Amino acid sequence: MARSHAHAGRTNHLPGGAQRSGSIVNNEIPPDNGEPWSNVEPPGMMPPPPYNQGPPPPPAAPYGYSAVPVDRFGRPLAGWWQRFVAIIIDFLILGVPKGIIVAIIVGGSSSNGVFSNQLLAGTVVIGILFSVIDLAYFALLNGSERGQTLGQMALGISVRDEGTGGAIDPKRAGIRILVLSPSIVVSWIPVLSTLTGLYTIVAALSPLWDSQRRGFHDKAAHTNVIKVR
Image (cartoon, rainbow, N blue to C red; front, side, top):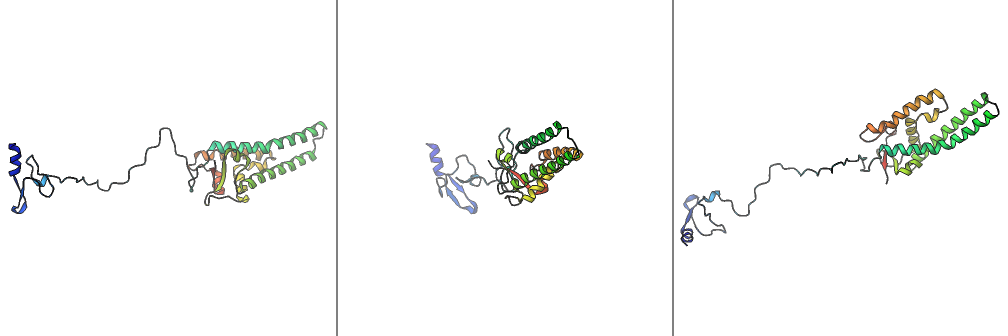
């Protein structure tokens, strides 16, 4: 009770000699602990925010997760294994019928005992014909609106223009496959076929050490290979 009377009779001195009553002034409750009014923080005030505080950092990626690279339009790029399996399918589609044809021709000639310059000339002609078929296959399909060979359709990937994100024309698609596998046009020449085959191995592996998963052939034709499903 004595404490209540003490509060009621107490006054607080303000600057300029003014006095404030000890009860409630301007909806503020006077301090009980004897602190001066200048040290009392008005109710409801929050501390100022830190100076130059930027936006909060993005959440960390889950453990074991790695971001998939995308093209300039935000579409995920195809993985190397998808591209590899797709072209293996393509070469099987092209190679099996050609192998059967060559086996028939060579087998028939051997059984007749005829292995002359005429047969060699015929083999060269067949090799050139097969090269044209291979080149046309990749140029027309990768140069179409869909930008997909049969192998790429199976793997859900597509060749797209690096700048526009759309389809490329057959000419660029033809350049692209020649940079990847020049052996398709010299497969009938033994030495060149071996040398270009070794180069093709390096070119096929080249997307592995590129941050955008682009191989030598992609850079030459200004293309990306994206996932479409």
